[in-house]
Picture 1 (spheres, rainbow, N blue to C red):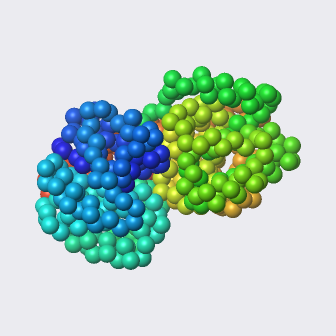
Picture 2 (cartoon, rainbow, N blue to C red):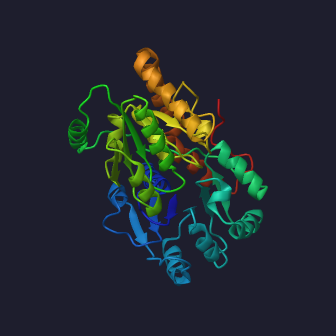
Picture 3 (cartoon, rainbow, N blue to C red):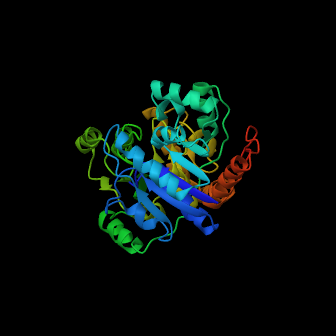
Length: 382
């Protein structure tokens, strides 16, 4: 099967990481895979270096904002490559649909990476609803919460395929991470928290920093490492104003997941989510997550079994969940070990990239061979 994966860019973010991991897995399964980045592929976009070198990487050098000049490039590329399936992500669907108006036989699958109301504006949703109804494109949701928001927004029941990612391993830079840790942490009782997420309103790091500061003022020994590119500089400025010497902003790092292996907990304080790849990475590494109850996270974490989930997205609730996790760390080592093991079991059972790719292949095949996908479900939750 020849698959064209279409993404806006290869910056460090969840959907981009997913496309790289999924493309690599398709290649391992002997599918001819092409990755198309709308924006220019810059040297600093380290995800491009993680793409298998045998996978063709293309770009149409889109400019910021609406850029209809890329349409002839897209048309030419698709005509030349003749993919069996075009798999779109984020706003790339809007442009690919215009090509579909010319090349009717294109088979398009679009993965909805977020809450349906967050993924697209009212106007775009109205346009997409029409294309979905006439089956110009097959949408895929990534969690029960994502599916529910999609049903509400479009009144259409889409297939559900859980996100997946590669198994996390320590990189060649892990020793440097240990050195950084040893230079910063001089008290063996310090508790290490890691947040891997771009700095945006969605990820809500301001609340996370406030929680850590309050707990430290109450006598807890917490160090928080925040790793991710800055997408909102106002948010970063707010963090800079309130952070203490125990809050460490490390920016975007290629080896960010190394920090999961030195951390006691992975912290995600998001206001909304689809199914975060970083949470799946924490499962893979055995780093226990402490998260807000938003989006697909509610379907992924069973409280005190494979992580800790607040009973509300607000600061007080998140603080309470973090205190629960810390108490287990301090006073119940056996339970802590069981939760870590359950994290790894969760990854293997539901969220490996192999399982994910197999489920997408089944869906792609059903479209190519004109089988009904109305009742397609990658798996049913226990």
